[in-house]
Image (cartoon, rainbow, N blue to C red):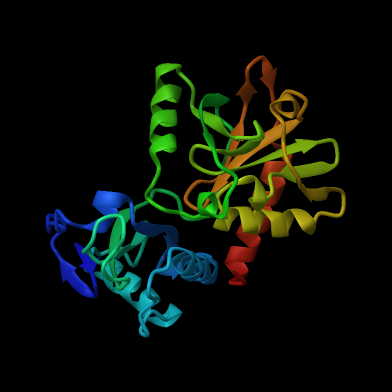
Length: 282
Protein backbone atom coordinates (compact mmCIF):
# COMPACT_ATOMS: atom_id res chain seq x y z
CA UNK A 1 0.00 0.00 0.00
CA UNK A 2 1.12 3.57 -0.71
CA UNK A 3 -0.06 6.95 0.51
CA UNK A 4 -0.97 9.47 -2.19
CA UNK A 5 -2.08 12.83 -0.77
CA UNK A 6 -3.45 11.17 2.35
CA UNK A 7 -5.25 8.36 0.52
CA UNK A 8 -4.06 4.78 1.08
CA UNK A 9 -3.95 3.06 -2.31
CA UNK A 10 -2.77 -0.22 -3.78
CA UNK A 11 0.92 -0.23 -4.75
CA UNK A 12 0.03 -0.66 -8.41
CA UNK A 13 -1.81 2.69 -8.49
CA UNK A 14 -0.42 4.78 -11.35
CA UNK A 15 0.75 8.38 -11.39
CA UNK A 16 -0.27 10.62 -14.28
CA UNK A 17 1.98 10.46 -17.34
CA UNK A 18 2.17 14.26 -17.02
CA UNK A 19 3.65 14.06 -13.52
CA UNK A 20 6.31 16.77 -13.28
CA UNK A 21 8.63 14.59 -11.23
CA UNK A 22 8.63 12.09 -14.10
CA UNK A 23 8.73 14.68 -16.90
CA UNK A 24 11.24 17.19 -15.52
CA UNK A 25 12.63 15.83 -12.27
CA UNK A 26 10.55 18.50 -10.51
CA UNK A 27 10.41 16.61 -7.23
CA UNK A 28 12.12 16.25 -3.86
CA UNK A 29 12.34 13.24 -1.59
CA UNK A 30 13.35 12.21 1.90
CA UNK A 31 14.47 8.69 2.75
CA UNK A 32 13.70 8.01 6.41
CA UNK A 33 14.62 5.10 8.63
CA UNK A 34 11.87 4.00 11.01
CA UNK A 35 12.67 1.78 13.98
CA UNK A 36 9.63 0.10 15.54
CA UNK A 37 7.33 2.98 14.67
CA UNK A 38 9.82 5.70 15.58
CA UNK A 39 10.97 8.02 12.82
CA UNK A 40 14.69 8.55 13.30
CA UNK A 41 15.89 12.16 12.95
CA UNK A 42 12.43 13.17 11.73
CA UNK A 43 12.87 16.83 12.67
CA UNK A 44 16.02 17.10 10.55
CA UNK A 45 14.30 15.42 7.60
CA UNK A 46 11.26 17.68 7.91
CA UNK A 47 13.19 20.96 8.04
CA UNK A 48 15.46 19.90 5.17
CA UNK A 49 12.37 19.14 3.09
CA UNK A 50 10.77 22.51 3.91
CA UNK A 51 13.97 24.39 3.09
CA UNK A 52 14.34 22.46 -0.18
CA UNK A 53 10.74 23.22 -1.18
CA UNK A 54 11.39 26.92 -0.67
CA UNK A 55 14.53 26.78 -2.80
CA UNK A 56 12.55 24.97 -5.53
CA UNK A 57 9.81 27.65 -5.30
CA UNK A 58 7.21 25.05 -4.35
CA UNK A 59 4.14 26.19 -2.46
CA UNK A 60 4.11 24.65 1.02
CA UNK A 61 0.54 23.63 1.99
CA UNK A 62 -0.79 24.96 5.29
CA UNK A 63 -1.32 21.41 6.56
CA UNK A 64 2.29 20.35 5.86
CA UNK A 65 3.22 20.43 9.51
CA UNK A 66 5.73 18.07 11.04
CA UNK A 67 2.88 16.38 12.94
CA UNK A 68 0.71 15.95 9.82
CA UNK A 69 3.42 14.33 7.70
CA UNK A 70 4.54 12.11 10.56
CA UNK A 71 0.95 10.93 11.00
CA UNK A 72 0.72 10.18 7.27
CA UNK A 73 3.93 8.14 7.40
CA UNK A 74 2.73 6.18 10.42
CA UNK A 75 -0.62 5.51 8.75
CA UNK A 76 1.18 4.16 5.69
CA UNK A 77 3.34 1.92 7.86
CA UNK A 78 0.21 0.67 9.63
CA UNK A 79 -1.47 -0.15 6.33
CA UNK A 80 1.57 -2.25 5.38
CA UNK A 81 1.79 -3.98 8.80
CA UNK A 82 5.20 -2.44 9.46
CA UNK A 83 4.65 -0.64 12.77
CA UNK A 84 6.36 -3.41 14.75
CA UNK A 85 9.56 -3.59 12.74
CA UNK A 86 12.16 -1.37 11.07
CA UNK A 87 11.40 0.19 7.72
CA UNK A 88 12.67 2.40 4.93
CA UNK A 89 10.20 5.19 4.15
CA UNK A 90 10.41 7.37 1.06
CA UNK A 91 8.45 10.62 1.16
CA UNK A 92 8.31 12.27 -2.26
CA UNK A 93 6.93 15.75 -2.91
CA UNK A 94 6.37 16.86 -6.50
CA UNK A 95 4.96 19.98 -8.13
CA UNK A 96 1.50 19.40 -9.57
CA UNK A 97 1.26 18.93 -13.32
CA UNK A 98 0.86 21.76 -15.78
CA UNK A 99 3.27 23.68 -18.00
CA UNK A 100 6.58 22.71 -19.54
CA UNK A 101 9.84 23.82 -17.90
CA UNK A 102 7.84 26.76 -16.57
CA UNK A 103 5.16 25.33 -14.27
CA UNK A 104 1.63 26.68 -14.46
CA UNK A 105 1.16 26.30 -10.71
CA UNK A 106 3.39 25.75 -7.70
CA UNK A 107 1.09 23.57 -5.59
CA UNK A 108 2.35 20.12 -4.66
CA UNK A 109 1.30 16.54 -4.02
CA UNK A 110 3.04 13.90 -1.93
CA UNK A 111 3.62 10.16 -2.13
CA UNK A 112 4.77 7.85 0.68
CA UNK A 113 6.15 4.36 0.09
CA UNK A 114 7.55 1.88 2.61
CA UNK A 115 9.82 -1.16 2.67
CA UNK A 116 10.83 -3.46 5.53
CA UNK A 117 14.46 -3.42 6.73
CA UNK A 118 16.49 -6.19 8.32
CA UNK A 119 18.40 -4.02 10.81
CA UNK A 120 17.00 -1.95 13.68
CA UNK A 121 19.90 0.15 14.93
CA UNK A 122 23.08 1.06 13.10
CA UNK A 123 26.19 -1.02 12.71
CA UNK A 124 29.46 -0.34 10.92
CA UNK A 125 29.75 -2.56 7.90
CA UNK A 126 33.47 -3.25 7.54
CA UNK A 127 33.27 -6.11 5.05
CA UNK A 128 35.49 -5.73 1.99
CA UNK A 129 34.37 -2.54 0.25
CA UNK A 130 36.39 -1.09 -2.63
CA UNK A 131 35.91 2.45 -3.93
CA UNK A 132 37.46 4.57 -6.66
CA UNK A 133 36.84 7.94 -8.29
CA UNK A 134 34.07 8.56 -10.81
CA UNK A 135 35.48 11.15 -13.22
CA UNK A 136 33.16 10.98 -16.23
CA UNK A 137 30.92 13.78 -14.90
CA UNK A 138 31.23 16.38 -12.16
CA UNK A 139 28.98 18.03 -9.60
CA UNK A 140 28.50 21.78 -9.80
CA UNK A 141 29.17 23.27 -6.35
CA UNK A 142 25.87 25.14 -6.10
CA UNK A 143 22.89 25.24 -3.75
CA UNK A 144 20.84 22.98 -6.06
CA UNK A 145 23.47 20.24 -5.74
CA UNK A 146 22.86 20.06 -1.99
CA UNK A 147 19.14 19.21 -2.43
CA UNK A 148 17.72 15.68 -2.42
CA UNK A 149 15.91 15.84 -5.75
CA UNK A 150 15.15 13.04 -8.19
CA UNK A 151 17.59 14.56 -10.70
CA UNK A 152 20.11 11.77 -10.12
CA UNK A 153 21.54 11.06 -13.59
CA UNK A 154 25.14 11.31 -12.35
CA UNK A 155 24.45 8.85 -9.53
CA UNK A 156 22.78 6.40 -11.90
CA UNK A 157 25.58 6.48 -14.48
CA UNK A 158 28.18 6.38 -11.71
CA UNK A 159 26.54 3.31 -10.16
CA UNK A 160 26.63 1.53 -13.52
CA UNK A 161 30.29 2.50 -13.88
CA UNK A 162 31.02 1.06 -10.42
CA UNK A 163 29.32 -2.23 -11.27
CA UNK A 164 31.12 -2.51 -14.61
CA UNK A 165 34.46 -2.01 -12.85
CA UNK A 166 33.67 -4.39 -9.95
CA UNK A 167 33.64 -1.54 -7.43
CA UNK A 168 31.30 -1.23 -4.47
CA UNK A 169 30.98 2.54 -4.78
CA UNK A 170 32.60 5.64 -6.24
CA UNK A 171 33.58 9.04 -4.95
CA UNK A 172 32.09 11.96 -6.86
CA UNK A 173 34.10 15.08 -7.72
CA UNK A 174 32.92 18.64 -8.22
CA UNK A 175 34.03 20.89 -11.06
CA UNK A 176 36.97 22.03 -8.91
CA UNK A 177 38.12 18.36 -8.82
CA UNK A 178 37.43 18.09 -5.08
CA UNK A 179 35.91 14.96 -3.52
CA UNK A 180 32.37 15.92 -2.46
CA UNK A 181 30.55 12.67 -1.66
CA UNK A 182 29.98 9.04 -2.59
CA UNK A 183 27.28 7.90 -5.01
CA UNK A 184 24.92 7.12 -2.12
CA UNK A 185 26.08 9.17 0.84
CA UNK A 186 28.39 11.71 2.39
CA UNK A 187 32.08 10.97 2.90
CA UNK A 188 34.34 11.37 5.94
CA UNK A 189 38.03 10.64 6.25
CA UNK A 190 40.26 10.30 9.29
CA UNK A 191 43.93 11.28 9.31
CA UNK A 192 45.65 11.20 12.65
CA UNK A 193 43.40 13.03 15.11
CA UNK A 194 41.42 14.92 12.44
CA UNK A 195 38.02 13.83 11.10
CA UNK A 196 37.33 15.65 7.85
CA UNK A 197 34.27 16.01 5.63
CA UNK A 198 33.60 18.31 2.65
CA UNK A 199 31.60 21.48 3.40
CA UNK A 200 28.15 21.98 1.91
CA UNK A 201 29.59 24.81 -0.22
CA UNK A 202 31.56 22.20 -2.18
CA UNK A 203 28.27 20.83 -3.55
CA UNK A 204 27.71 17.75 -1.37
CA UNK A 205 24.26 16.63 -0.28
CA UNK A 206 23.07 18.22 2.94
CA UNK A 207 22.80 14.78 4.49
CA UNK A 208 20.79 14.09 7.64
CA UNK A 209 23.23 11.38 8.75
CA UNK A 210 26.11 13.72 7.90
CA UNK A 211 24.72 16.17 10.45
CA UNK A 212 24.40 13.44 13.10
CA UNK A 213 27.98 12.22 12.59
CA UNK A 214 29.36 15.76 12.70
CA UNK A 215 27.63 16.28 16.06
CA UNK A 216 29.03 13.01 17.44
CA UNK A 217 32.52 13.73 16.08
CA UNK A 218 32.58 17.13 17.78
CA UNK A 219 31.94 15.40 21.10
CA UNK A 220 35.11 13.28 20.82
CA UNK A 221 37.79 14.89 22.97
CA UNK A 222 40.64 13.13 21.15
CA UNK A 223 39.62 14.24 17.65
CA UNK A 224 39.02 17.47 15.75
CA UNK A 225 36.13 17.71 13.28
CA UNK A 226 36.96 19.82 10.21
CA UNK A 227 34.67 20.77 7.33
CA UNK A 228 37.08 21.49 4.48
CA UNK A 229 37.66 20.51 0.85
CA UNK A 230 39.13 17.07 0.24
CA UNK A 231 41.49 16.45 -2.66
CA UNK A 232 41.76 13.01 -4.30
CA UNK A 233 45.41 12.95 -3.14
CA UNK A 234 44.24 12.98 0.51
CA UNK A 235 42.26 9.75 0.09
CA UNK A 236 45.39 7.62 -0.19
CA UNK A 237 46.94 9.37 2.82
CA UNK A 238 43.93 8.77 5.10
CA UNK A 239 43.89 6.24 7.93
CA UNK A 240 40.16 5.65 7.60
CA UNK A 241 37.34 6.56 5.20
CA UNK A 242 33.63 5.98 5.69
CA UNK A 243 30.39 6.79 3.88
CA UNK A 244 27.20 7.82 5.68
CA UNK A 245 23.48 7.76 4.94
CA UNK A 246 20.39 7.34 7.11
CA UNK A 247 19.52 3.82 5.98
CA UNK A 248 22.91 2.10 6.26
CA UNK A 249 24.37 4.42 8.88
CA UNK A 250 28.07 3.98 8.14
CA UNK A 251 29.87 2.02 5.48
CA UNK A 252 33.62 1.75 6.01
CA UNK A 253 35.80 1.85 2.91
CA UNK A 254 38.35 -0.95 3.15
CA UNK A 255 40.22 -0.29 -0.09
CA UNK A 256 40.86 2.70 -2.35
CA UNK A 257 43.27 1.81 -5.14
CA UNK A 258 46.26 0.24 -3.34
CA UNK A 259 45.47 1.65 0.11
CA UNK A 260 43.60 -0.31 2.79
CA UNK A 261 41.92 1.30 5.79
CA UNK A 262 40.83 0.66 9.36
CA UNK A 263 37.35 1.36 10.81
CA UNK A 264 38.00 2.20 14.47
CA UNK A 265 36.68 5.77 14.46
CA UNK A 266 33.57 4.76 12.52
CA UNK A 267 32.78 2.12 15.14
CA UNK A 268 33.25 4.63 17.94
CA UNK A 269 30.96 7.17 16.27
CA UNK A 270 28.20 4.70 15.46
CA UNK A 271 28.25 3.42 19.04
CA UNK A 272 27.70 6.97 20.32
CA UNK A 273 24.94 7.54 17.77
CA UNK A 274 23.09 4.37 18.79
CA UNK A 275 23.24 5.46 22.42
CA UNK A 276 21.69 8.78 21.43
CA UNK A 277 18.90 7.00 19.54
CA UNK A 278 18.18 4.65 22.42
CA UNK A 279 17.94 7.58 24.80
CA UNK A 280 15.46 9.18 22.42
CA UNK A 281 17.38 12.43 21.93
CA UNK A 282 17.19 12.79 18.17
